[in-house]
Image (cartoon, rainbow, N blue to C red; front, side):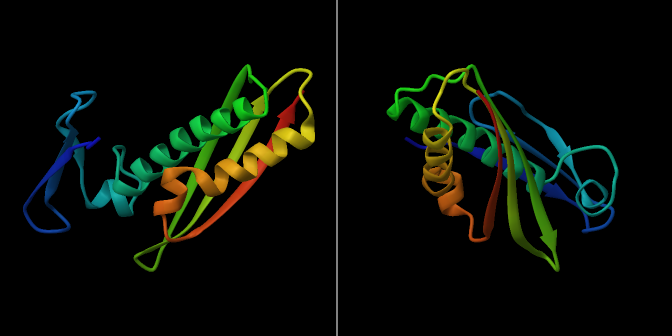
Length: 137
């Protein structure tokens, strides 16, 4: 299986503008630039997209790990903060809440740790990955 994305950059670094899209067509011609990446101008940036990828991948991996333990969650909600400093990604902080009424908390925690190390995006990121887990059971 291959997934495709494309990006085009026009102009110099500070005043230029880029656009990107994905092969599935889920979004296309999304704008990004220096100010959306290094300042607070509305828009997206590569680090935000990595955070979205990690949040969605971890939530799915966590659900799979719960299923291996015969737990079906009502929901898994993950927020990811990617730390970008000195032109390097240094940390991905997962903050996850799982709703699994009646489930064994220790099995949920075990599943979360397995997902943290087993999620394909966690594996590809060469940075510290932390997990703050809230269990509602």
